[in-house]
Amino acid sequence: MSQIKTKLTGVPRTLLLPLRGRAEAQAHPDPLFQDPLSVEWLKLVGWDQELEASDLKFGEAFTIAMAIRTIYHDQIASRHIANSSHPVVVELGAGLSSRFHRVGQNAYRWFDLDLPVVTELRRKLDTPTQQHQFISASVMDFNWMDTVSEVAPENILFIAEGLLMYFDVHEVQQLIDVMHSRFPGATLDLEVLGNYAKLYSKTLTQIGAPLKWLVKNEADLVAMGLQVVNVCPLFQLYPECWPWQWQLILRFLNQFPYFRNGYLMVETKL
Ligand SMILES: C[S@@+](CC[C@H](N)C(=O)[O-])C[C@H]1O[C@@H](n2cnc3c(N)ncnc32)[C@H](O)[C@@H]1O
Image (cartoon, rainbow, N blue to C red; front, side, top):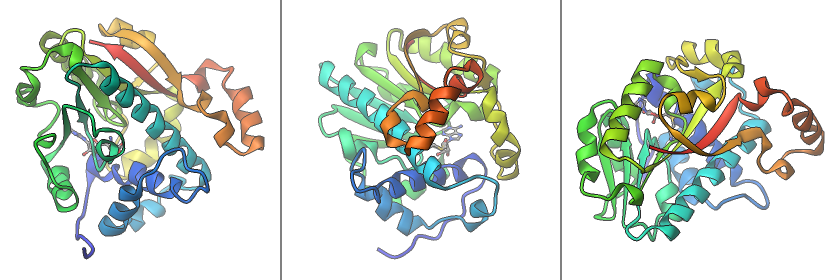
């Protein structure tokens, strides 16, 4: 397949960041997960050199953090699929996630939802099937929910990886409210950023993807009506993945709520 010409802007452009992280994680002698598709898709889509010139750092720490968040959500999806009678997974703001190909084989249905510009790009790389479908819509256009309206909520896992921080708090609240009324008891696996992420605010604004929703900690999610089942601060997971000097620094920093709450992955029930 030849290189695909595409020019992503705004928040869709950020899909290149985790795609690159997953692809580069494969260079590790013993990667946390196998993901040849991310390597192939990154080659085909190409890297955005303007991002290289931004203040975002794409070194070893970036790759490790992206790998850890990937395996965390993979495990949530695998567990859901193993424990549900008719497991359905919906990735919201899926970008070029290749999670279905890593862990989705036994799902009854798997939906990758993203904006039309991204779904169009996915169609050039990936082939939909009855089991693995693409939804071309904004997550805020609630009609997409009709696609899974017949499914019992306990069979549904929604994954919002690297998505909700780009909406303002009122939009996130509205989305949670509607999802709660349509799918009470379904699992929503989401990521939230704390005030620590403000360090990256300026750069993300410059690349057209300002961070809009930051939380103090998981109590903010409870206040929004979510039932928190499990919280994983990203920098506390898989400490052995980090070089030993960083392990010491992270062990020290993780004691401080400001750092601990900087990047949370939270399993919730609607
Ligand atoms: C940082 S990327 C994350 C992509 C993917 N979840 C991953 O981790 O590889 C953010 C994604 O959110 C998508 N997005 C932004 N606004 C959206 C909206 N209103 N509805 C659906 N997806 C949206 C972008 O197109 C982009 O693919």
